[in-house]
Image (cartoon, rainbow, N blue to C red; front, side, top):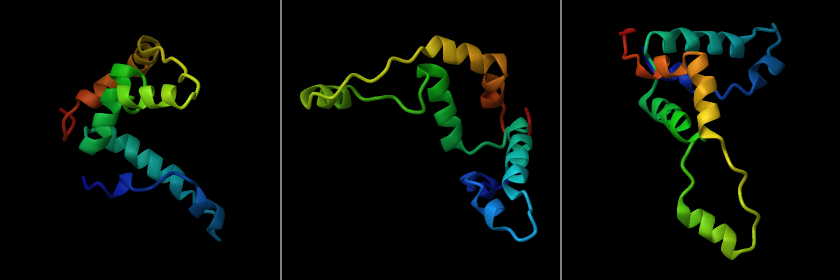
Length: 105
């Protein structure tokens, strides 16, 4: 029920270094999946998930950042099809995971 399971960066470095070939990263991912099914997702990650569902990206790009890119002659950022991202995520039940409260309700 704690947030410790979400601290792993899933970089697989521990797997590369483990002399016993323990697949801890895969175990960590499996435990996170179980926790998510029970609604045990840290609020910060739940917020990122909601933003992905809304705009198709992990965070909203501020208009000021887009203006700054234009000011310095940087190319426009590629467009994101938020509806397509939302459709794919709904297809795997991601929105249901986000809606679940702690304890699986």
